[in-house]
Length: 111
Image (cartoon, rainbow, N blue to C red; front, side, top):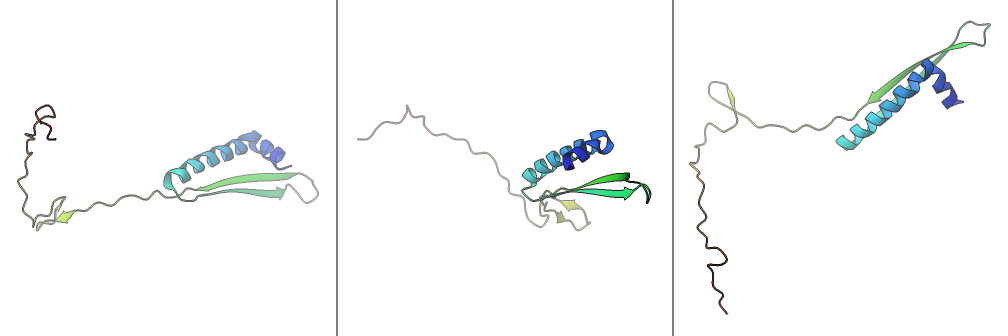
C-alpha cells in the first residue's frame, strides 16, 4: 500500500524527490563522515466529513551533516591588519642549498 500510494502522490513526483534526497544524503554522509537525516511527512486530511476521499500533502525534510571546515591562523599588526606571518618575528633569509653530491658512478666500492 505504501509504495502504491507514494507512486500516486503528485503523479510520482514525491517518490522521485524522495529518491533524489536519499541519494544526495548518502553522498553527504560519506563526504562528511557523519550522520544525516531524511524525514518524509504525510499529512492526510478528509475532504469532508461524509466522504471517503482524502487529500494527501507530503513534505520531505533533509538534514545533511555539516562538513568540518579548517581554521586559519592570522596575526594582527599594530595597525590592526591581519597578516599570515607574525610581525614580531624576524623573517629568516632562507635560500636553497645546492646538492653537490657525487653520482653513484663517481663513488667507488670499498670492500
